[in-house]
Image (tube, rainbow, N blue to C red; front, side, top):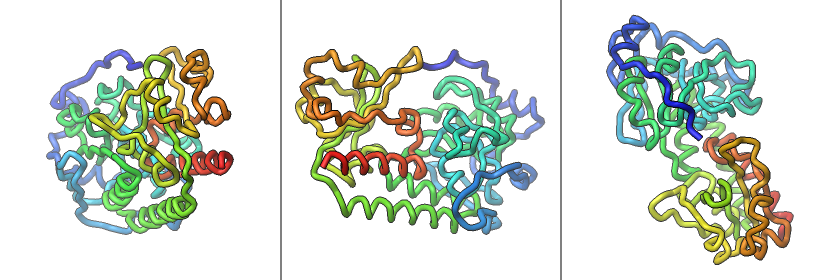
Length: 328
């Protein structure tokens, strides 16, 4: 459920509020670019300090070039894949939207970050600006409309990962934009190795990653990071159609009859009970092989749904391979 629409200031009003002059979409204020985050997340890599200096640039997934005079050190994250990638390279965002960012696997509960309030795609831009970023990263298709207001403070890079390979490429892009490409390459290669090893033991069993609640179910198609990753380790016949996050009915699931189901339970009222329990009264669901064989795996909905990055996908991969091994 979306939060109430926040009060948002215009780009000009925000700039006036903070004494900021308008910044071009492909540039950053020199003073802001020189600031560094107060704290960084721990990683199992080498020193994450920026190794590159001078101008850096990248083209985002909407075709907009983002260019900075120096590598970014203060990044505001409108999407969780941004937090995921920054954690991989040893950096902490100056602002976050998703509560998952406060998890120990990412920035952590003690990280010095500003919360970005507002509904999804309707974020309070004032929170972004007050974090004094030199780069903002958001999700294409959802936060495009924030560009004009956000760029009163810093360039906006929009990401739209449609596969696990896209998530790896984004990690490397973050390395480029933050001067930490060596660390990004190290973490990307480690994840690629995990996928290759898991794919070498690929199962013939059919899986499904689904989410939602009875009457409003969706599937992670093969054109999503989670779906494409599951296709590497098992039979995953869920095509995208017009929407990579497609709606699905129990009758359609029954036609395929997956051997293993990964269920993400959501509820508008919060505190969702396991999805399998909520669907148990449906006779078609009860006839599924996965339901009868107790192979419906309730997974961490927030991580599977919003993580999208290599840390999140490592957990997805571990859960999937364990479940498939047990089902063999």
